[in-house]
Structures are given as C-alpha cells and as structure tokens.
Length: 562
Image (cartoon, rainbow, N blue to C red; front, side, top):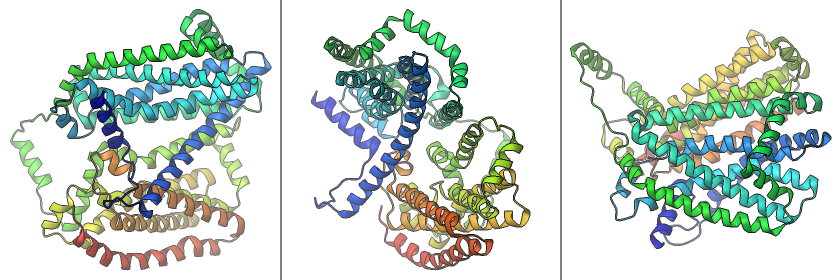
C-alpha cells in the first residue's frame, strides 16, 4: 500500500505540476503564491464558464420538461448524454497519455508493480474527468434538486453516482485503449496518436457546442424544443423502463430520502473500486509491453533519387535567421501537444464562435440576414473595433512566444555552445509567433468582410491594428518567458499547457483586450480616435519594448543555466 501511495503522489505531481509554495530554502515566496493564484483564477474562470453554460442548458430543459410532467427525464439526459462525453474524454485521455515521456519506460524497469503504475496513471486522469462529470452531470442534479426541493441525501447520492460513473468509464477506457495500442503498430507512434486523438476531441467539442446552441436558440419557444427532442424523449423513457441499472440510479435520486440507497451506492462504489484495481492488475503486463515498445523508430531505406532529394532539401545552405526560424516552426508543428494547444487555436476558435453565432440568430439562419443583423446592431466604428480585437486575440492566443524559451529547455545548453547569434535566436522566436499571429489577423479581416461587409480601407485598418496589437502581445510574451522561463519539465504538456507564463499571458490578453473593447464601445465615436488608441499608441509602445528587449534577452540568455 505504501508503494501504491508513493506512485499515486508521483503521478499527481508529474501530471499537474503545480508550483511549489516553498523555494529551495524552504521559504514561502510571493512569486510562488502569485503563480498559484493565477492558475487558480484561470481554473475557476474556465470551470465557471462551463458550469454557467451547463446551468443555462439544464435550467431551460427543466422548464420545458416540467411543463409536460416529465422533469425526471433531465436526470436521464444528464446521465446518458453526459456519459457519452465523459467516455470520449476518458478514452482520448487514456489513449494519448499512455506514454507521455521517457520516464515511462524508466519506471517500468524499477522494482514497482506495473499494476501500481497503471493504477497511479488512471487515478491521475480520473480527477479532471470527475470534474468534467461534475459539470456535465452534476449541474443537472443540482437544477433538479433545487427545483424539486430534494432532500439533502439527494446530493450525497448524486456525488456517489458521479464517482461511480467516472470510475467505471476510466476502467472501461483502459480496457479498450491498452489492447488497441498493443495490437495496432500505428497507435504506438506518439505523434500519430496525439494528432488523431486531438482531432477526435475537436470534433466532440464542435458537436457539443452545436447541440447546446441548438437548444439554447429555442429557449423562448418550448414547443420547438419538445418537437426537437421528442424522439429522444420516447427512447429514453423506454430505456428507463427496460434497463434495471438506469432504473436503480434514477430511483436512488427520486427516492433519495431513503438511506438504504446511500448504503447500496457506497457498497457498489467500493466493489467497483476493487474491480477496477483487479482489471488494472490483469492489464498491467500488457501495459508494460506497450510502454517498452512505444515510439519505436522504423528505418526506411531510400533509393538514390530519394536520397538526392532529401540531401538537397535538408542540407542546403540557408541564412542563420531562416535556419533558426525553420527550427522553431518545425519543432512546434512536429510536437502535437504544442501544435494543438498553440497554432490550432486560430482555426478552432473561429469555428466555435461561428457555430454559436449561427444558432444564436434563431430563425435568421441565412448569411445575408445574419450580416444585416450584425451591421444594424453595431456602428461602423464598433464593427471595426470588434474586428480588431478579434484579430488581436486570435493572433496572440497561440502561446508561442510566451513559452518559446520554456519549450527549448532541454536544448538551450547546446544552442549556447554553437556559434549562433543570441539576437537572431530570439528574433526567430518572435518571427515564428508573428507568422501565426498574421494568420489570426487575416482570419479576423476575412470575418470583418463577410460579417460586417467592411470597406477595403477599413479592412486595411483592421489588419494593421490587429497586427500591431498582436506584435505587442507577442513581445510581452517573449519578455515574460525570457525573464521567467520554465526550464524544468518532464513532458511537453507541462511546457505548454501547465506553463504559468502562458496563464499570465492569456489573462493579460483577455483583460487588456476586454478593457480596450469596453472603452471603445463606451467612448470612441470616430475612426481617428480609434486609430490613435489601437494603432498609433500600441505601435510606439511596441517599438520601445523591442529596443529594450534584445539587450535584456541577450544578457539573460548568457546568464541562463539549464
């Protein structure tokens, strides 16, 4: 048991990599407190946003179902649809995190039972999945309980059911993912696995966003919601009558005042816990074999023509700046964790916003009607303002520059030994960030043309202002990661998603752009003032910051020790 607890602690500290409150001298530093506070604020904001969306959805469904006396169906909807999404999240998580870094293979050689290693990894993944379950299913339980004035045991039973669902789904996910990884050689390639799983997640997110917006679009017309969900209602009612486990779960919630259900749920949860450990024990040898064979390299023999082409393409002489830029570009795109959590946001965010906009318009579904409504609700100055802020956010939200030195942690020592100019090295990182920043600005300019039908001179203003703001935020991100690089991490997830610099930069971007947008809507009435605030002043600040950055960056890089 002691070894199992130690393994659990190791996996939790490795997966979540929260900043330690105490420094190397054992003192609590204000820097660590601010880091932890920033992460907590961002987590609360994200969780609160999802929770509010779920609350809106279930509150509207409850009103509709209660009007025809089938309000208990909200529990069935939460259990069944929620389980589908938790299964998707759990399967993708178990599949894509089987092998996270070289330490996995090292751990498998230690005198630690492989069943403990698999259990520790599953437990570390079960925590965020339980939080998702709490939002997706638990919100429905709370809505139902508050409206029906349920007994306090209702909420106890609800938590036990959520734990039970999470545990079962995590166990089933590993029962599927480990044999698949053992059988299919293609899945043992980490990059292929991450890309495939990433696109599955994107599809799931878009489908969920579409479903939620379809329901919320008809909140003022319950008859349309009932008509839309009629087939599902009949299916779920039949399933509720025919499937005893679902009957038991719903009964334990509807008759929660009976303490027998609490006892039974505790017993079932304990039994499933022991069953899960037994399953992990059985899967452990197969898991160990998968770990040892993961990311195997298969050598392809090239013919003469292929060899000549390869050498001409990859060994030709390039300028130092171009070579450094290509290094940044390839290293970002070659690592799926970096690409999917960085540049891909430029594609994903507009798609999600487009879906939300489409369904929020209700019956006004045609593009012409949507653009007419958008133009009538905003003045020309506000249309340009919205486009600029959107472009600046898309261009700077990729977290490329604010994690650039952190992602290079394991290579900085080697780079410093090479005859490479530090200014070119840092400049290549900024150019890399601005390449994707320009793409984000172009997306925003295209949206302004399609949605607001902005004239050509104003499109140039949108593109120029959003590009300057993007450059400003990318320079600030480079400042932050140069002064405070996160150089000690064990897997790419920690370098990108768990990097406090990315958290700080994201909060700064949201607060700054939100403040600029609010101020623009309230007080800016002409394009001249808008140009001064969103183009001229940011350009001056950016030039000053760039002049100050390179001496600072070169000196910091010289003193940096990895």
